Image (cartoon, rainbow, N blue to C red; front, side):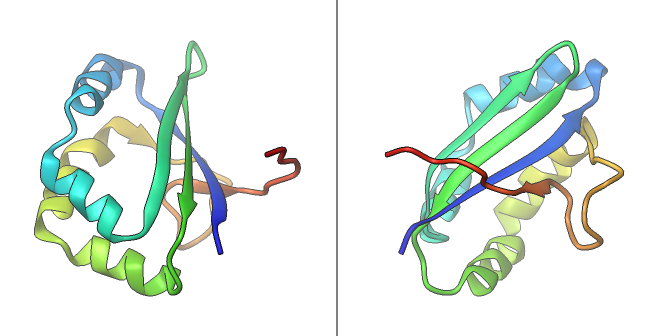
Length: 110
């Protein structure tokens, strides 16, 4: 069963160009890990001048927690996050175990 998931986070203004550059050429190992984690249709949008990132993906696996743990344990993903995370500004209202704040789906049309 496909689960649609949306997330948001702030983006530090001084890192916008770097973040765009990074995501224009995502490392192949990262793309492989995302796919291996059963994530499809992954998209990140940026809203300026508020500098809010909105991420959307569809999860098609059977054990989300396990797939996310495998992604977090991947050495290349850790290196990617080490570069990307300093660019981001987590929302104060995010959950205690969240970096990107998860959004509630309130409407969908296929």
